[in-house]
Length: 84
Image 1 (cartoon, one colour):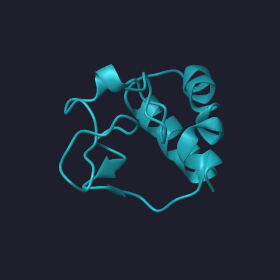
Image 2 (cartoon, one colour; image 1 turned 180 degrees about the vertical axis):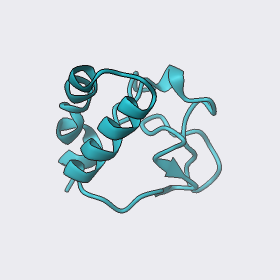
Image 3 (cartoon, helix red, strand yellow; image 1 turned 60 degrees about the vertical axis):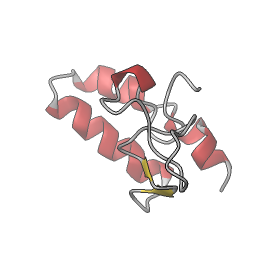
Image 4 (cartoon, helix red, strand yellow; image 1 turned 90 degrees about the vertical axis):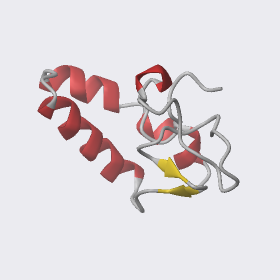
């Protein structure tokens, strides 16, 4: 199991469901439940759009703009985005 979701970068231990699900209902080793459900990505977006979404969500949850920017920087290098 990956330590971080390979779509949004969220720590997998922070996922309330533990992880996303594959098409056969098994737990995904790579993606969180916010990004991946029943074997499909929940949002059709680019890495840049995912960065913006995550940055805004972190700020909404009380994180400083700098930390939100810092934590969202690696998103384009995650496995989901490298496959494109």
